[in-house]
Length: 92
Image 1 (cartoon, helix red, strand yellow):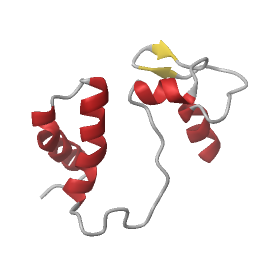
Image 2: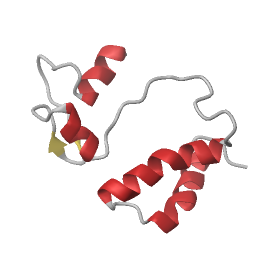
Image 3: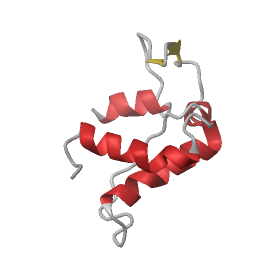
Image 4: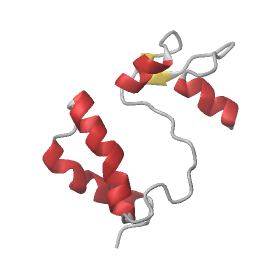
């Protein structure tokens, strides 16, 4: 699975097939361009922000995305984070 994630993130080139993100083939895109599109890889870090709640931890990348891509209005960050937590069964 790490090979697949590396191909999606752009740190490893896929030898065949295509990778589509929001309807666009991104195989030829460099990793930094994929990040600007809102597609980024994070590495597992136990307790990255240990003093913060799960909701707060989820708001951090959403805040970054809102500032860089303007896909999410800054005022909707908490609302979107709660929606994501509900989707994976962690809200409540």
